[in-house]
Length: 499
Image 1 (tube, rainbow, N blue to C red):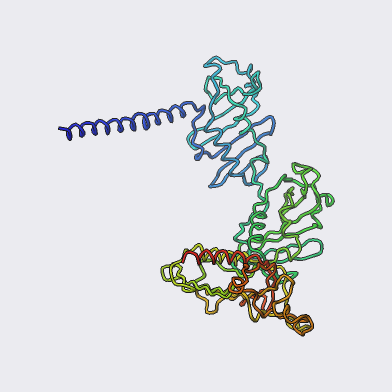
Image 2: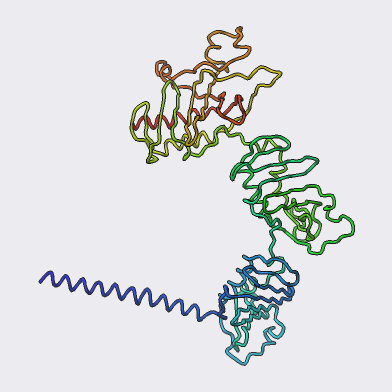
């Protein structure tokens, strides 16, 4: 009996849930959607629109057409339209709602400024055409009177609706200056202040400077600059520039930036400071145009600043350029202790020394990211006229990274001095030896064992002397920030306490 009662209660409960879903949620949701649709002033599918005509007392007459997949501005100039701006205008029109209806019929339109509207927007699809006409402001100056096509009603709409649709030619036209995609650029040439700078893409994410110097550049910096440059938007556009004299400074431009690739090449000419148009008064606004084209743009030249900087600012100073996923084995010798971790066939990391056992992947990747972010401060290289630089023959830190598909590992060796600025052997031997005149970084600093015996922690060096093999700068000795030693010790100590 009790079981039967529970079954009845359960059936009632299920029925209540079903009613709640179908009536309270689904049905009311449909009612709400239907009500919202009914409140719209006009009904038009914006994705089916093919023609837009705007007649504005403020901004003149504008015609936009969609002959294919893209919108084209056909009047007052013929050019590509700003797809996002056109979409916003269509969204405003298709979702237009009234604040209230002033009159249902028999409206004297001239009393509300609708005999000569401030703004009329006509949108057409292959099936229908809608017209929105905005008249005068209401007495409180917050809303506009509106007439919708042949609808006999007089609507009052928010001023934001009119403002979202009363756009200028400049607002609705494509303002991107360079029509080339970042991934299509393989070469960048900058001519400015009598200097030529040339950069070439070596791989999808690697760039190299070839003029005026040759070295690898910071990919992150260059890729961002390239993205900013190819997305550069004009602050103003002069479609019919004056041709008498060099008014814009573009016959003999102050700067030239060429973006070249297999598909396209464009050269941006940069001239004088802008004196007229929308960009006037903005710092760094200059006249510019694309070589071989007529329109003159007003652009913010701050986008070009990274390409105008001294070459060394762009230099990639990283010591080890690897991705954590490339590393299959890592060996670390530090403070008299050796750590070895290996990635197995299942892409799981295993610790092989100083003990054996599993290890969290993030513990290894954190070390790899530390190495990837390590940048050198100074570089010393041998030359034909001078002896070779000091070498790290007996390092206090050695890190070896074995990469997939690579026979030879990347090996980093580092040494450092004590607080007096001398290597440990120099401190013992004094300063009259040959070693003090030409110091060779060959000795180990205080190890953990020594530190433990003396009751103190290993000191953190300020500067490391580092060599990396293989490296683009063959045989070079680098100086780097010594704080990486403290961070490495922290990670290794954490790994050690878990084993």
